[in-house]
Structures are given as structure tokens and as C-alpha cells.
Image (cartoon, rainbow, N blue to C red; front, side):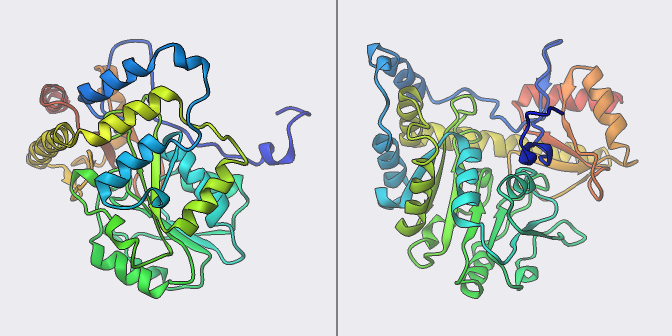
Length: 350
């Protein structure tokens, strides 16, 4: 604590990312990164952008990237907002669209940045408990609110909602913004982007960090009605007009256009996930139905913390959350077939 801190800083409870230890080489199954390299086309575009033009500011509107996203999802450039990772996009969403007198609603077990942003921007928020089986039940959100946000699939529980449930929520709450955070949608869920023309209060947020293997490039985006996008642009241009560099714009646009590589990578991860689920189940784990690039699993004895520590000691990192209701579970990112074989072998020994 310092006498120079503002009152706000004293009251912050910052987000804690997954471990990035440097003491040895680990099999990293703790931060939901993609185990496969980026699209070769994306890497070529990044290298091509690393030239003398780096002395110039990048395009503040990132039109090349917006056009690539718009073409992929068959929407207009005016429907697209881009930012420095989906976390920055979400930060602008909280500030520009979700701060109202009525409470913001989100699941109690969900992406742990939501309460951080609510606290940072001093937003009145209310957590809606997941059901006993860890499902998000959108019927539980039928209360007065100033906005709703939830991940689909949910994190860390990995389960996904169908578009029928999301559409029913949108019809019920047409007076407030509904944000669907789709960081993991490409691994088995349905995107809500096709609904934006019908529901002007819907905003969908995605990232290039997972299914497009570009976590190190920091690119995220939102898709929604132009009125929502305009609000985000106003916040962005009051904060940082140049959130994406030249290499980020070029690399992300190329990755979005390389549909074949993207689909192949996703299918490999899905296949490995199903193999992992089967193996964990045979070992006696309880595994929630996953539509993400990770699984959420309870060891037979519920000894998640000791198992996490034992795996780490043997060079395998998974994610453990010491929180009520989920402290007997591990979140396990899906790696390559070879990485998962090593993980399962170590797990069997333990």
C-alpha cells in the first residue's frame, strides 16, 4: 500500500492469470492456449508487416481486419469492433454498455474478470448462481437488470447453451444489452452472431487467442448492431486510438481468412478432447460435458488441490481454483495428442 495510490486502487482485487512459471519446462495445460502453431498465412503476414512502415502509426480503425471478420461472418464492417485482446474489448463493453442503475447480471462461477471489471468501473452487479449440475440457466435471469453477460461455453465449467435458450433470453430482455462471451465457441458450440440482425441489444465477443492460435498477438473483437459498436468506438477513442499494431492487424486478418487451417486445428482439438474425456472417465473422474478446448473434471477422491500440486511437481500444469463449489475440480486444457498422453500417463501413476 502506498500513500500515493488513489482510493480506487486500494479497493481493487485484480484478475490473476494462469501460472507462467520459468523454473523448468512444463506441459502447459493451464491457460487454454492452442497447442498448435498459428496459420502459416498469419505468420507470413506478420513477417511481411515487420518492415520500415513500423515507424508509422497503424490504421486506428483496423479496416483490413474488420473486413476479414465481416466477410467470414457475413456481416458489415459497421457491425465489428476490434481491440487488444478480448479482455480489452470486454473492458470497453463494461464501461460503455453495462454500467446502469439496475444491476449487471452474470454467473457466479464464470470468467473471473467479470467481477474485476465490475469493481474497477464501480458497476452495480449481481451474480446468478449456476444450477447444482453447473448449468447456466437463463431462466434465472428474469429479474430487473442493467445488462447481462455470460460466456458460451462457460468457463471454467466448459458447458454450452443452445441458440434457442439465448434467443429466448433476448426476447425477454429487449431493454438491456446481452453480451455473449464466445472465447471457446469454435470447439463445439454455436455462435450467436447470426442473431444480431434480429436483436439490436445483442453483442457477441470473440478472441483470436484460442482457436486461431494467436494468444501472443492480443486481438479480440465484438460483433453487434452499429449503435452498440459506436458506443465501443467512442470509449476506445477516449482511451487509446491505436490498440492494434500493424503486425497484429495483418496477422489476425490472415488467420481469419485461412478457414481451412482454422477448421483443421479445431477438429484436432475436439478429437483429442473426446479421447481425454474417455480416459479420465475410465480412471473414475467426473467430467462435465465440454464444448471448449478444456475439460472440467473432478478426481475420484475430490483431491483436486493435491493432484494439481503433484502434477506440477512432475512437470504438468493444470488449473486449480480454490473457490467454493469448484475446489474439488481441475480445469485441464487440451494439448496435442502427445502432451495428453504424457499427462494421462503421469495421472495414472499418481
